[in-house]
Length: 268
Image (cartoon, rainbow, N blue to C red; front, side, top):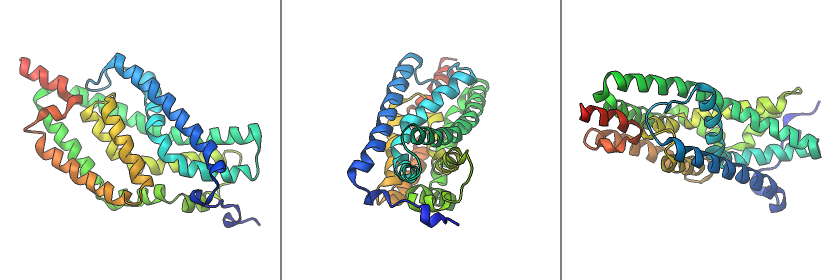
C-alpha cells in the first residue's frame, strides 16, 4: 500500500524556481485581478457600516473575491506543494482541474465564514440603528475579542498548521476519492479561517470595503504565515488591537466602519 510519506512532495523552499514560479505567478495574478475588482466595487459602495445594503448573494460573491485578493498570496506554499503532488500523477487539463478544485474548496471554507460575517454585519447594523451611541463600545468589544484571540492557543495551533505546509501535506496524503482535492482545499481553508477570523472581525469596525484596512490585514496575514517571526508578529498584533480598544472611546474616528452610526448620534 502506498503511504502518505511516499506521496508527500518536497518542501516548497527546496523546489527549483522554475517549478515554483508557475503556481506563484498564477496565484498572484488571480489575487491582483481580485484586488482590481474589489477596489472598483469599493469605490462605488464606500466603507459604510453593516452590509451597505447588499443582499446575501451579492455580499457572498464580493466576499469570495475579497478573500481571493487577501488570502491567495499566503496560501501559495501549500498550493505549490499540492501542485507538486498532483503533477506526479496528473498532467495538462487534468492537473489544472484538480488545482481548481483545491482552490475552490479553499474558497468554500471562506464563503461559509462569509455567511456568518453577513449575519454579524446585519446584527451590527440593527444594533447601531437602535442604540447609535453604542457603536463605539461595539468597536471596543470587536478589538478586544480580536486582540485576545491573537494570544490564544487555538490561534497558535491554526497558525502552526498554516506555517507548516509540509506537515499538512503528510496528512492530506491520506485523503482518497474523486473529491480529494476539493476536501483538501476545504480542510486547509478551515484552518485558515481559524487562523484569521479575528483579523477579519476588525473589518466590521473598520469597514468591510475599507481598502486600506484590507491591504494592511492582508500584509499581516502574509507575514504571519510566511515570515520566520510570524508567530511573534501575531502576538504583537494582538497587543496592538487591545491598545486600539483602549483608545477607541477617546478617538471614535478609529472606527470608520461604524462612523455612520456615530455621526447619526451627533446629529440628533
